[in-house]
Length: 151
Ligand SMILES: [Zn+2]
Image 1 (cartoon, rainbow, N blue to C red):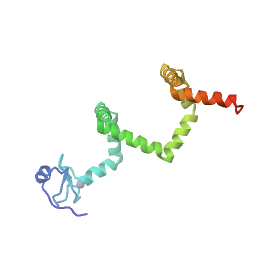
Image 2 (tube, rainbow, N blue to C red; image 1 turned 90 degrees about the vertical axis):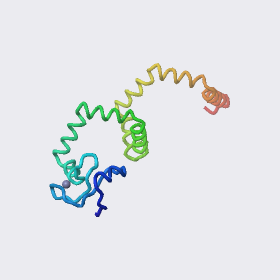
Image 3 (cartoon, rainbow, N blue to C red; image 1 turned 60 degrees about the vertical axis):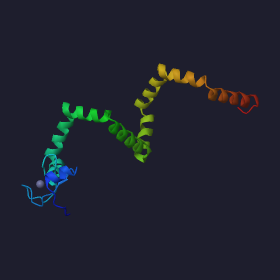
């Protein structure tokens, strides 16, 4: 892959995240470098893929700073939109459907449903439904069917 040579300053001015000098980094990669810290893209990728890099990422995620960054991201509009989109995609996938079905059939899923049904929120939702036109119409249909001897 070839890149157009652009200095770090010129890339920064152009709003780019990477620049390219055409010169090898200290490990010999002829690759783009990040404007933010001058690091070689390939070096970063190699470190990230190494056991040491993975351990460092796990440590970072478990750190207070990593957790704070993650929760701030989750609370942001972008983070919320990303989560919503990935949840929707997962829910629509075969894997997501199978996981949902397994959860519904699990003891935990059953317990969660039972707890919800026993909650004030569920009772209020049921009361609201029972008082709705939709529920009354359904009841009227049932009564009519019963009167006609269908059920
Ligand atoms: Zn490098």
